[in-house]
Length: 408
Image (cartoon, rainbow, N blue to C red; front, side):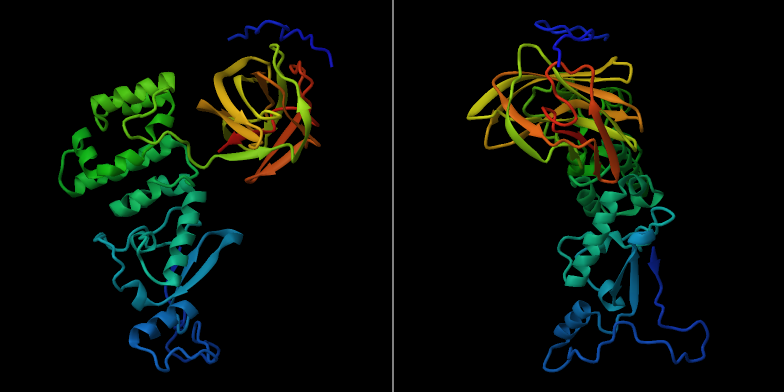
């Protein structure tokens, strides 16, 4: 492939313009129904002989013996029924919630569930643990619906911490921030406190530090966070400095990593070395079937030993206009095949729209991806790849650099 291109000029870096169900064992009328069976009853399991009352209760829970209530978790084809017992649900769980039944529903297909029992880490019993895990997985996968539900503000502060601390939460951090503020506003009103920055800070407590302010878009932070009073002056300055420079090692105790990032790889194997440097760029064109947020790209490490690379990543629009430019230095070793290059702020990608990733790496040879795919299916999203006219360093959809993209 020719290294000459009207968009990129060799030897010099180009300038680019810039639900809960009630027990179902009782028939609809008072007449007996001979077809109705006891839920979960097993004649082949001895759950009583030579056991204490507590051991009997535990056997009933683990083996779903005489279960008298069901939780329906999920929706559509992914609905899961979890059998339980009222005596376990209404028994002590270590929760200090006093708000009643907790969340009733989070959407048309989201069932009722008791967050202050389901999310407590110390709640005992295999059945309760399974219920808690299922609920958490549903929250992570449907984070936007759950966090924006009016019922979310009813959870206790310990359950709030469980949700806010989760790396698996699939939601933009601005949605997480708004949900936390909504919860805190409700808590202030419940305690008859004026809704202001000091009291929001007071009711959130340490949960405030689980909101990942450093990964918010700088415009959103400026307009919605900086003047609200939730953060102290020093905390606000620290976050602003990080958003501008990304060099501060400590951002006022806030977490700087993004949530629920996924990597879509277009290469399964590597073979041989790949030349980089001399201001020639590798590039690949891609599009996605659904709207996602592009968080960065995956690059190959050095071919042998250890090496440092000056990396410049550019994302171009369908018209080859510059959208993002990100420069960073990475240290690599050949034992680790790939490295992540994360952008300062995520880029929302429109469905079925072509974008181009252009990569400059200044350093020794890297690994070379081969047997590339033109289509990758990842996390219910299809990614399509094709050779870009911008590429000067021979990367194509079949071989070369840029093995994957990072998104959520």
